[in-house]
Length: 469
Image 1 (cartoon, helix red, strand yellow):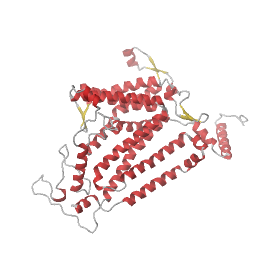
Image 2: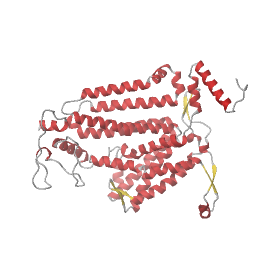
Image 3: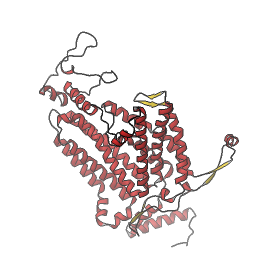
């Protein structure tokens, strides 16, 4: 058995012949020998095995995942259990989800009040927790092989990737602060080289950790870690980028996803009849459509309220005079009320010819539409992932809701869309950043740029000869 187990997870020796697999004569019977313990999934479909796996792999996975699945544990606070004990399980779950959702929304309002820096720290903590939940699933599935350095290397790569991304962000948004401090200036100058060196060190550690007979499994887990980094760290970094553009670009998208999740659940709970997708049997078309219209209306109203406050619309910047982060500016045209003509066919219906709106409200329609039509596919993706490993939730951090990743599966996809949307339709050249970089150049470089700009303006007739210098 020991020899068989090693063969299933490691690479097969080149000079050995593979063992033949004998099948029973009757159609539909399981093959004898190494593959005789093949099981079926809950949907009565044959379980697809990774290339090279044997019965020992399947047994180990089934045992470890089954342990996770096991007897369902009730993680609901005892106070709620006693208060709702007289209700049916359906309504009890409804009230638990509702109460804890309100608690999470209140917590969200509190961290918004505390400011952008606290929001960034919360995003960082959420990222680490989501990474831990996904990595632990891989560890629980494959822990019987006792892979060396797996968790250590996973957290090391998380550190390397965060160092790279946040170093790029600090250099980009706080260039003046970086140039003013000598240690930061050195780290900024060689940031990418340091990041690459750290990653190469981890890469070499992984190669040194390879164990004979477990090569294939170790490469599975190496890929597992990197895909997790791509899904969690990269997209959480985009959330930070959106936040620097103004808190409204952070709050509105996240709120639209939350609204869609709540309203889709409400419409599905009371009116749901038609199943939407097999990956999530409880999701219905009624909930999906009701969530869409509710989210679009919510996005327009929330944008109208927030666009009137500079605290929400101004970019997060570092003030060199006070050495503090500040959110203060003259709102751009995107956040100035403008008059729009209502289409003729709608004028007779609503009785208005024009309407005053913030231009951002029009963009909020695109954001809320994505949050309600495409965003749920992040949840469907997570559902497929959990079904693949036969687990109900990523963790049990939030009673009635599962783990942190269960709540943020749609948020990461939304963050990527918002970042792409800003870069494509909103963001333009930033004069303040150009001036900051200009002031760090040598005097001869500054004079060269000045003369080049002066000649360009004179050629275009925007600057007359003898004007200026």
